Amino acid sequence: MRENLTKKLEEDIIFGVLLPGSRLTEERIIEEYSTKRHAVRTSFAELKTLGLLTHKPNHGVEVISFTPDQVQEIYEIRLILEASAAKKTRLPVINSISNKLFDIATAHKNAYDEGRFREVFNLNKEFHTVQFSCCTNKRLIKLVSEYARIVHPIRVMQYGNRTHMDLVINQHFEIVNSMKGNCLNRYMQATTDHLPASAVIAFRKNYENLRSR
Image 1 (cartoon, rainbow, N blue to C red):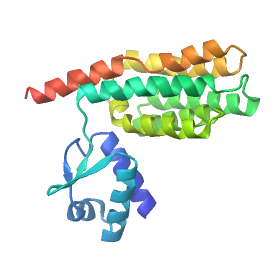
Image 2 (tube, one colour):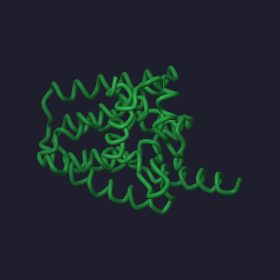
Image 3 (tube, rainbow, N blue to C red):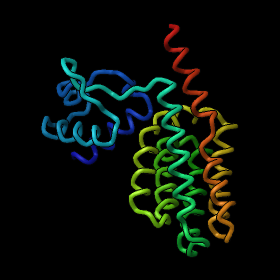
Image 4 (tube, rainbow, N blue to C red):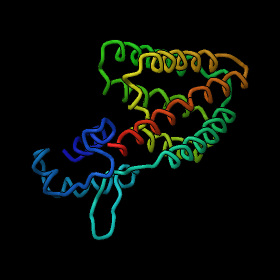
């Protein structure tokens, strides 16, 4: 029950059901998710650790929110971390890894084509978990995961942009192909290409539109 609640709240934050900056109370979650108070408290604690909730003095628990400048800084850090993780990968990866990545990338494409966006989100997470598991620096893997998780709601904002998502899908397959070869520069380039500035631009535009209402 608790694990399901945490996953449900995580996805509802990421997909905008629970909006950035919105206040969450135990009573609200108990009522809306038909759960128990102890499960809510545990899930709140876990989501704070994941960076999706924050506690503000005299206000309570809120869904995390960012300014465009903060998002820009996060993406700059991600670029450094993920390029470093790619550099710390021994190529070519074993066939079981490349085959698994190909299967996930294919399932991700099919899910997007069929409009199953929550599956798209989870398959994307799985793809990059497997990808960066090949990095030889385990502490670096953890940091990559932490910073990727912070921007999940920002990434999801682009799911309605077919041109953007076609690029993302193709980049997944390029990452797989580059990991099957011996050229580290190709793999590093494929990894950094997957962090487009368009995500930050789209977030800034959406942020400014909301502020102007």
